[in-house]
Length: 158
Image 1 (cartoon, rainbow, N blue to C red):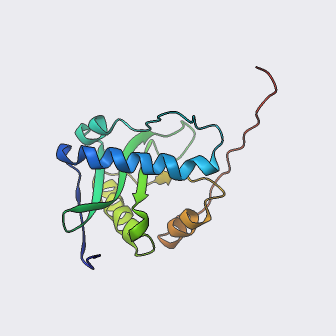
Image 2: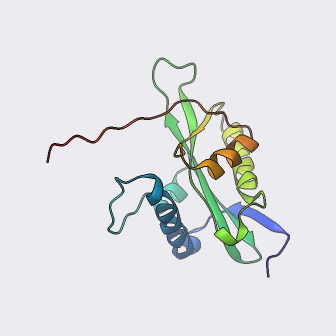
Image 3: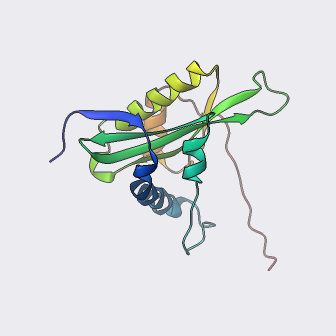
């Protein structure tokens, strides 16, 4: 049964087993968009480091005690020619498929945005695969705008 009251809180080390499962959910959902992701075990994040970093925040959305969505913000250095020195980079944006379409990702983003503002970050960025239209729509719904397209070319060299 899905509870209507979803709470957002900071992740704690005891959440790590579930966070690692969600990380694999991210990898699984991104593989169809990126043929260069290895077919073996893949990890994207150092979740311990993120949770202990004072310039990062990992949030979880909970339905009761069950973690149903995740996301982090990490302060990163901007390119030297931009009008901001640092920015908040969002990652680990994952919502359990059973809970998608309920605005939970927007609540996570709102919490990360509040954190970014509280630590003086005025720019927030994230990456999303150009063919991942549901994710793009979700990000646009909370105010993100398309900015740049990364392109790739695989050579025929071994």
